[in-house]
Each structure stands twice: as structure tokens, then as C-alpha cells.
Image (cartoon, rainbow, N blue to C red):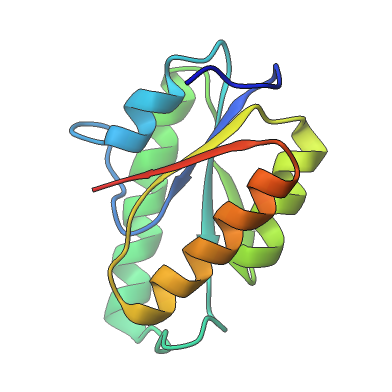
Length: 131
């Protein structure tokens, strides 16, 4: 499928904070510019608050990911809040042609992802998720 808009591709990192074996990142890399983003979804339905050890892991994992992405010329953008609000707004703000992410399988996550895909489709922005 060819994208109907020109512009960067957003790759939305979630629990998959790696560059290798990352289908969403591979799809985004086919565009001329890639905007990597991580959203801390503290208020997502079904999401539980992170404890100290999880926050420590997240901080260090995001730091390592940001360092690797920066070396490739694609600085990691960090956001905090509701993904169903942030993703469409960010895509509109940067004039994104597409948004890619790897799926999550919890019922609440599927519901949020479905809302995001619908909002992006309504805005004529290609949205695709991967296993």
C-alpha cells in the first residue's frame, strides 16, 4: 500500500525497546524520515502503576534505545499520557504519512489500538501494526 500523504513515519515503541527484529521499525525505515516515540501510558485502562524496579528497568532501557536511535539520526521522543490522544495529535503535528507499532494483546490494549487506527484513518494517515 502506498501512503496517501508525504511526510515522516512515526514508529511507536512500547514494550519492545529494541532495534533488532522490530517489524514496525522496519516498516517505518522505508520512509525518508522516521520519528521514534515512546509514550508512558500511566492512565491507560488495565495498565498498572510501575514499581521501583520496573521504573529503573524502563529508564535504562529507554536511555539505551535513545542512544542507539540518536546514533542513527532519529532521536527518541518521549511523551506521557493517553496514547489515543497523543498519537493522532503527534501525527497531525509532524505531518506524518504513517504510524507503525507492534501489537499488544491485552483486551484494553487492543481497544486503544483500534481507536488510534480509526482516528489515523479518518485523518488520512496510514496506520499499521505488526505481530
